[in-house]
Image (cartoon, rainbow, N blue to C red):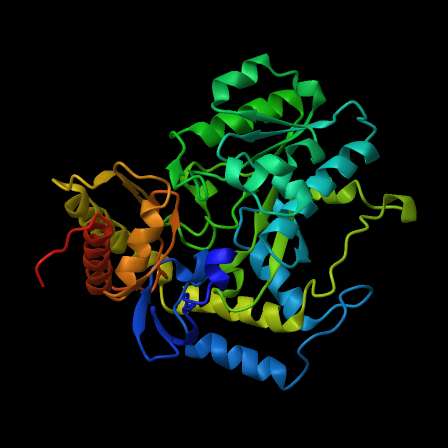
Length: 404
């Protein structure tokens, strides 16, 4: 806070965006290397999404979702359910952001077992390095010291594991749910899970009657090369949290999806009601943006164009790391990547990102790992341009400079 408020500090003020670029109030342009905190999908000022929002504004921007509904929310719920295999995630609950989507999943899971008479379950399982949001319930699942340590004693009972083999020592009859970011942990520094892990978790949960919750807030909507990360292992959860890319990075909106069997447990009198409502749940403006976002996926063949971009990024990351003593490791999952810097002090990544701004790249670091997670619409040439800027940023952060 003191650094941000210091007299000598001039915050970078973003003024506008177009495609993969954002521009500050001085007219300087930058490749949006972290998709505006992992949200933007099809680029800034996309005409289809812009138009959908304007059209909805001509009708109504917001109305209550408590006791009423609206057409964009109805159509979006139908569209989301249709993205998954039949008889899997068939119900949708709207909220505001990733944290609230997780909070909904946690409360649904707790209440589900209460309503079905299984009162002995009281514990969640999450993982070391997890990040699921900053509200108190979601924070309890997290296990990153900088974000979560201060609040550990105030949260729900959560057992944090490092690997699936530790499940052997867990009494499954006491567990409500396992929560995981599938395939890759984001805030942990882009840490990849071993292949087959999701299938292991699904098997253990089925054997023990435990619910499986996938946090696809960051990994959803094409980031990993498929629409959802769980598709890579063909594993479906009982509940799924979606946000960030849901509206293409335009407006706050989140959704918690669940199976029919979970939904049906809540049917009945008022005592079975899921009492959870946010002022902007299912807001028509956000839902209109989300519908347009999904339409762009179809019209522009976004997913079909990803494999070549993923391969191009892999080649660029390999070239960046080869023979570069300042790069300890590169990690990639689809269009999600992390460049871990060697010999860092916890702030080297931040210095690298600040240096890279001068060369036209805007991104952020997690400790000494620089995240490169661009909008999916980025071209191979723009990937190369961004990685060149990152290479210069790394050298300058190390007190060196590359020839022009």
